[in-house]
Image (tube, rainbow, N blue to C red; front, side):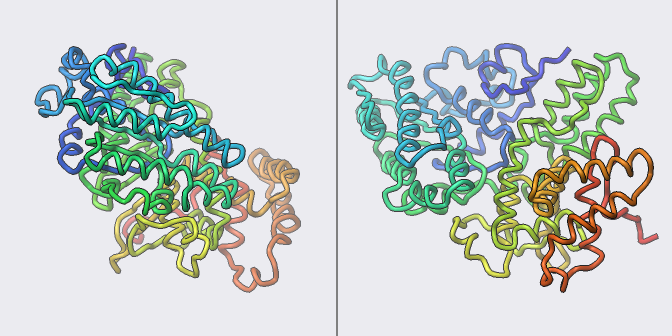
Length: 491
């Protein structure tokens, strides 16, 4: 029986406790060669933390004696770079910062987290350094300066890993634009922290930096404080750095099916199911599509344990993305873009994916929706689907799990009063069970259409009606709801 690392993002634990692992260590050389300060973006729960942990274990000088144990059987272990186990490692994870409360409370939470990481750094490396490092409990930036001073006068250099750099700030952004601006503008604490990191990388002890996050919005808003990162998230060479290919998923399904004692053709059926619900993410227009790794591990773990498919194909850990979709729906033209994407009446087209845009850019957008479409791409609720004949990039919903999130968001847009959702569900249930569509038609006519203003009705058409029914009837447990049935070769 395979031991799946669902919820495990510690490479050391994966490597030493026999967890199933898809080798991505061949990317270490490419990352090392491309630059010293890198920014890598992917949607939530896409394996970014495990990748940072891989770098941490590979470069940590304190783990030199364990290199063969950790990496000897992997691609990079067969041909390591000269820099392996040559760095002092400091790792921050901004998803641990509490985004609630006042600006001062958020600032204190951020400083507490950084100080906690520095305290661990002192425990790990003080015996190797001649100069004493001092922890300043009231000021994490002074603590960082103390660390860099000690590192600078040693034969070593520091590799800084920052995980989910925009996590807590994104949470603030969806709740309060004013507090968000306070964090990233002027002397805002996040801008100040990143400026201190930038200074540390200018010959003051920090040699390399790898940053992960979800979108470029926050980095754009603090650009003057941190403008040294090379963006690698749109490069084809790193399109499969996080995520599983279909061949990798198929090979593992064979082992799971054998464990459950099913005929081997069951692996093909399971793969078709996973392809429909989980595949579809493409991070370069010419790259292979990949599966969300958290959803894959969720499915593998449930399937192997119970020898049947999970009833709920959406892992609850991904359901939190509803908040981000709700935020995008509230931006100018965001709601209409979500309606268009779900209905698939017209493709979502952009000239290019925007890689530098801030909150004010999105709030002040005119008729152009490229920024909102780009944001939905970074959130993982739209993905690349090739190029149009005009050369524009085509974006679409990646899979059925994300389509379900869209349907829920449209229901919220059309039916903002939560109390009437159950009425709609009952009307839909009558159609499922009894084949009677009349209650559903009455619900749409009496509850949904009054939501539209007279101005909306100027543009109402068949698509308006179809979208209303689609959002109410979406139920991936009973059936797969398709807006259109594709007919090959036009026949």
